[in-house]
Length: 177
Image 1 (spheres, rainbow, N blue to C red):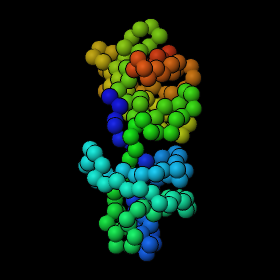
Image 2: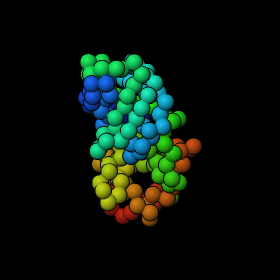
Image 3: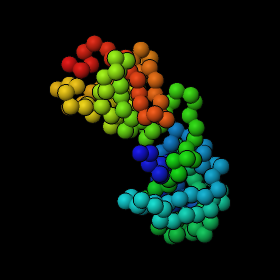
């Protein structure tokens, strides 16, 4: 099941005496903050937003995003927001190009080989730099390994179908050993 809220940033500190906050972006698209009208703030363990603010101003500054939130008008008010997480509804994530998926979309998908063998479900995605690797919790009897690692490369991962919840793979020799 897809999560409702997706993390896109974390308030690291107050930035100015006028109430701006410095945000560490947790998104490949920090420029998305420049067009946001509102932000939803969460405490670490919150399932739903603890606070909601209108964005008065947003700008990129070095590796940070600086936000001026309505009603946060001094450094003291801004400091109270330190550590808050900024999340968006999963329906509001930035669309990716065809063939690319967010990790939260992949977790829980069934992995099936071209021969029809159901390997198990994706529990994590490792980002190695060269290519991603799907971590699969194997179905009983598929392998003696605690997890199966599937490289996300063209001859191996043939199709990712979010609608059916299935990833089709061409299993390379030795991946189940």
